[in-house]
Amino acid sequence: MPHRWLVTGCSSGVGRALAQRLVDEGEQVLVTARRPETVAEFEGRPNAVVAPLDVRDEAQCQAAIDLAVDRFGGLDVLVNNAGYGQFGAVEEISADQLLAQFETNLFGPWRLLRLALPQWRAQGGGHALFVSSTAGFTPYPGLSAYTASKFALEGLAESLAQEATHLGVRVTILQLGGFATGYGRALLQPAQPVDAYVPVYGEMRTAFEHFEQLPGLNDPALFADTVVRVVRDPNPPLRVPVGPDAHAHLTAALEQRAKQLDDFAA
Image (cartoon, rainbow, N blue to C red):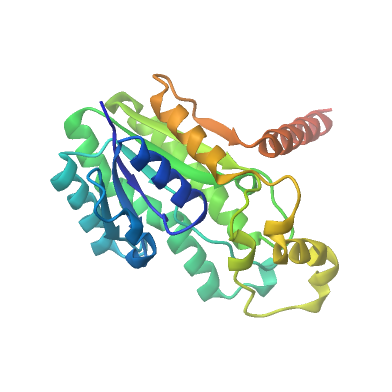
C-alpha cells in the first residue's frame, strides 16, 4: 500500500530527486515548491499533486496539509526539505538575514508539524523527516546562521520524538553530507562583510563557489534511496547519516566531543 507524502522544496536538488523517485514508484505525493512552475513536470501524473508552498507562509502551509488530506485521504509522511544557506560569520549577519534563515529552515518545519500533528493523532501515526546536515552537529566557518538553524532543527526533531512517539509518530533526522546540487551557488552573502574573517573562511567560500565541481560529492539519488528505505523500515532510526562523508565527519566530531568531555572531567 503506498504512503501519502508531502515533500517540501521539490524544485531542485535532493527534494526533486526524492519527488521523482516517489512518483515513479507509485507513491501518493504532494509535490511542493515556492514556485510551482518549477515542478510542472509532475502535473498530470495520477499519483502526484503539485502545490505552491512557501514554508514561511502559514496560510500556504495550512492549504498544503488540507490538500493532502482532501486528495489522498490523509498524510503519512512529511519530509521537511525546504531550506537554504546563508553565508557569513556571526558579526556579518544582519538581524533580517538571521530571521530569514530561521523562518525557512526552522520555523517552516515547525509550522507544518503543528498542522500535521492533529491529523496524525486522529489516524494513529505519521512520520516526520527533517533534512539536516553535518552542520547540524558540528560547525563550519562562515556558516554561522545556517549551522545555528540546523542545530535548532535537530533540537525540534528530538523534542518531537520524545513528545509524540506514544501517538505513533516516528521521527528521523537526515544528516546530509555533500551532495551534487546547487547549494553552493545559492548561498546568500552576508549583509555586513568584515575583512577580518576572510582568513578563517576564505577557502570555504571559494569551495562553495565551485561546489558542484568538487570531487566525491554524493548523487541526489542516494538521498532518495535513503529516505525510501527509512520510511519503509518498521523501526526507523532517529538519526541517519546520508553519505559516506557524513558518516566519517560525524564520527570524527563525536570522538572529538568525547575527548573534550574526558579532558574536562580529568
